[in-house]
Each structure stands twice: as structure tokens, then as C-alpha cells.
Image (cartoon, rainbow, N blue to C red; front, side, top):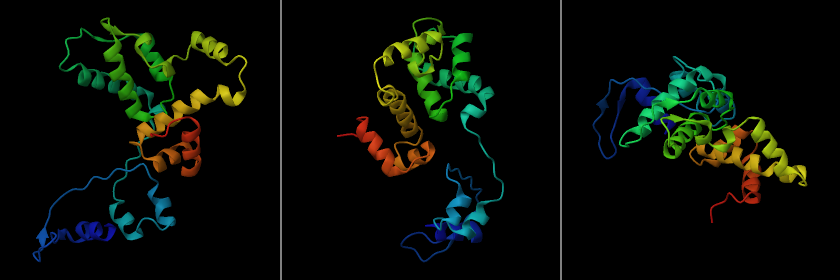
Amino acid sequence: LQVKLLRVLQERSFEPVGSNTTQHVDVRVVLATHHDLAAEVEAGRFREDLYYRIHVVTIELPPLRERIADIPLLVDYFLLKYLQGTDKPIEGITREAMERMQRYSWPGNVRELENAVERAVVLCRQTLIGVEDLPPTLAGDELATADLIAATVGKTLQEALKEPEKKLIQAALTANDGNRQAAARQLGINRTTLYKKMKRLGLLQR
């Protein structure tokens, strides 16, 4: 497939399956990936000639936690998206709720943010989305800390870390559309370790 793609990019032509007629194309190709393609070339999984052919203009997009100024814009966009077709009188989000969202690390990136906004729209009963409408992982205040301490009294460290670990893995899987290899890479572990953790935490679908 990489060879075929290289030919289309290089020669701007291709032959449809089952045809001997060459067709010419005039297109602009935009590619996106969460893989480090330079590393993939070094590992022999990505063709070097194709890499340099597509490596014309590169835009590095940092993870959401490194561009918190984008969060209000994204929240507004997702609010409009999920309010369409509803009769809810939601006008926005409270300042405290927005601050919580900007303090959160977003391991699941923009997909996790979208899921949080969709959940808030479903749960909100006021004109403004409040902290109480956000997922529990966004609590992050003194009360949540106290609740966490109370919930972990009498537990071993491994037991206390079980729920946060489970949520991080779920967020990584969501961010990568269920792709375990990609989720493992995001979490900094190998796929075998991820599988064992999912099995231990009850995340494997039966």
C-alpha cells in the first residue's frame, strides 16, 4: 500500500483495480498520525522514500493539556454540537467548571473533552453547566481529595490505585478508538502489559 501511495503522490497517476487505463489526479493530500514516523522509518515499518515525500509541511499538534487556551473554544464548539436538536436552555458553562476543565490533564485528549461535554449536556438541568455536571475525574478539589482519602483508608497502595489506573486505561482506549497497541504506546507500556492490566481490572469484553 505504501508503494502504491508513493506512486500516486510522485507521479500523480494510478490504475483502478481491474483496469489497464491510467488515470491522472490533481489533489492535495493532508495526512495525520499520532505515530512518530521518523521512529517508524528507523524501525523499518515505514518506507523512507514515502516519509520524505509526504514530509513537506509538518504541523505539530501538542496534546490538549499543553494548550489549555484551546479548551474554551472546543467546549463552545461541542456545546453547540450536542445542543442541536434539544430543547435544553443551556447557555454556557460556569467559570468554576471551566477552570476545572483547564486544570485537568486530559489523558484522553480532545475525544475525552468531547465526551465530557456531551455528558454535561445530558446531565445539566440549569442554564449553565456546573462542576456537578462534569465527570468525577474532573473534580480535583479539596472535597474530592478528602473523598479519595476516605475511600482508600484500609486499602493497600495497589488497591487504592486500581480505580485511577482503570480510568486512565479507559481514557487511552477511547482516545485511540479501542486500538490497544496505540493506547499502550500512549500510556508508555507494551501491549502485553496493557492486556494484563485490562484483564486484572475487568476491562476485557467477554
